[in-house]
Length: 221
Image (tube, rainbow, N blue to C red; front, side, top):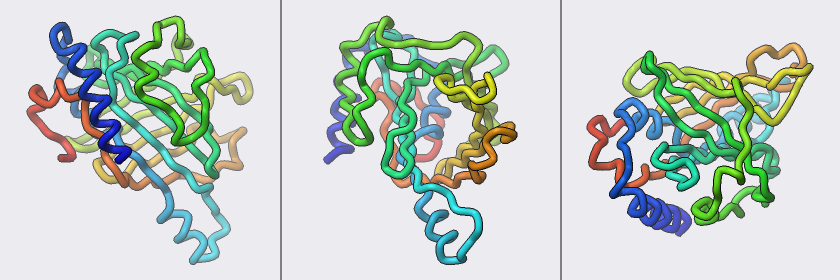
C-alpha cells in the first residue's frame, strides 16, 4: 500500500512538470536508479550476533527516493532518510546534477521548517508546497560520485549539518543494484563507528514517471 501511494504521488508530480521539463541526461537517470531504494543491514547485524563478533553495527535503515520537487524546477532530487535504532538521524534532499566530466554532483539541502517528524511519518506530498526558502544549503559541501561500471558507482557524501573537529563528517558510498555500502572517511574522531555498513536493497522506488520514456538503459530493472 505504501509503495502504491508513493507511486501515485510520483505520477501527480510528474504530470505537473511534463510539459516544461528539461530531461536529465542518461547518466543522471542511471544514477537515480542506483542510489535508490529502502535498505537495511539486518543481515549484517544478525551475522555479527550469531558469530559473537566484537564488532557490532547498529541496526540501520536507509531510504533513497528519486523525486521531482517544484522548488527546484525540473532538476531531479533524492529524498534521503537515515534511521538508526529506530531513531531518525538524517533527512534531507539531494539535488542531482551531472558535472562536465560526467560524474554526478549531489547538493544536500536541509529543511528549515519542522519536517523531522520521525521515520515513516514523512508526507511526500508536503514537498509540493515548499519554496526555496524552506531549504538551506552550505556552499562547498556536496557529494560526488563516479561511475566504475554500468551498475556500479563510488563516491562520497558529507553530512553538512554536523561538525566533528570543525569539519563535516564525510561518508564513502559504493552503489550497486542490490547493495549500498557506507563507510566513514577520516575516522580519527569517529572511531566508535564500525565500518563499513552493508545495506541490502530490500525495495526499489520508481523514477518520476515522465523519465521512463527517456530511460534507454533501464539499469537495475
